[in-house]
Length: 347
Image (cartoon, rainbow, N blue to C red):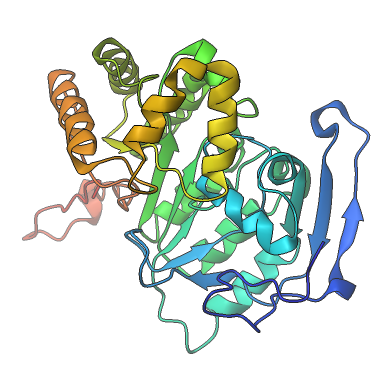
């Protein structure tokens, strides 16, 4: 493995190593849930990362406590990051996990810096911060606590039901700052889920996250991603998925068609050849121009999902839109005689 020149964005920070090889501790755990996995514990030098200017992401700053992901989603666009470590973007990405064990303390220090302006921080946008490893390393409670204590706005995107462990901390943060929670559910087909997202909780269990947050007064959106061409994009399958999302009480649904960047493309196409060989040529034609499906196809899927969302009483909204908990009205005895009570609503 290569550690000495690892950076979050090697193209723009070629010499800015995040840590040195002498800071790495490699571990394996003899438990069924971590069978065949290796964890590389490192002490990072930086944890708040700026998103490259050319990115399509609607945010500027991220925190990623892990690199690599035990969810093992065959389409994951972050697979390419493992090539910076001289690891493969397939099996190694699923089983060789980098853990930034000092992430909470480092984040707290960076949030306290006079140079930090309190800008929104997105999490779960590269690899899932609530993947299986989080159950052992417990980095997110410290991260959320630091964000809460500094009243720093943040959002989390996840497939991991482990986020429910931290629901009370997130509720506390939502009382003092803007918090956005989104769950990723691209489809509800059980057979497709087992083969394409083998390390994730079932889609229905992910929708339980939405229900739980709603019960605690925090709206939760669903990123319907990815929509897989010729596999989950049939009108009946789109209807089933949007119906389930609406039934969970999600505040919004935002569709996103599969994109195949280098690293993910090779792994996904190999999976497609094994499981759906008759679709390989169709994918080659659909993605002939690059990583993204043609705009006409993306617009078609988006229109269908938005129409279904309207039918089921939902509205589209940008994924991860921050929201704040409604504050309770003051008791009548506490109100000034000539003033009306003010109630904040979910943003």
